[in-house]
Length: 205
Image (cartoon, rainbow, N blue to C red; front, side):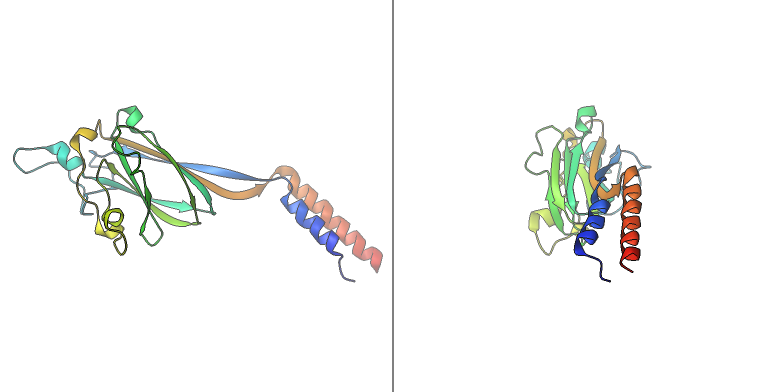
């Protein structure tokens, strides 16, 4: 006997009842002047620099051109929030850039950068592996400035301002959506539905 469509729909409904979407928050933080910070690269993607050998010396000028790179995995499509908290804690005036899984440019905080402030931005993103770049205003990427075919591998423009470095601290909290998970009662409901389906099939025989 074929199972009536209304029973199939009822079981699907049981799977959805009690399912709740959740979110994960990742914290990317550190200091641009920390030689032990393994996320740092120089603006041209060579090893990060912390001392200026030019004349006159300007350590802060070099440090302001360091960029912190982080991998970000978005597990399911949805809204992803990027909230900067470093400047409010005495840190750098941030410049944030987001790159696609193919390392092309997605977005930045260009519209609010340079105002000596943090930012709170939300983007609708597909699931995938992204790259987050955190720098000091206004060390933008060539991918943002010059567009396609420029990519993350082309580096940054090297115009970080030492006066925007603050105490060199940065922090970015990233909140991503996660797959919906059943609440505790959902499996019980599903079991009841499957039992009902089995009873109905035995009755038809």
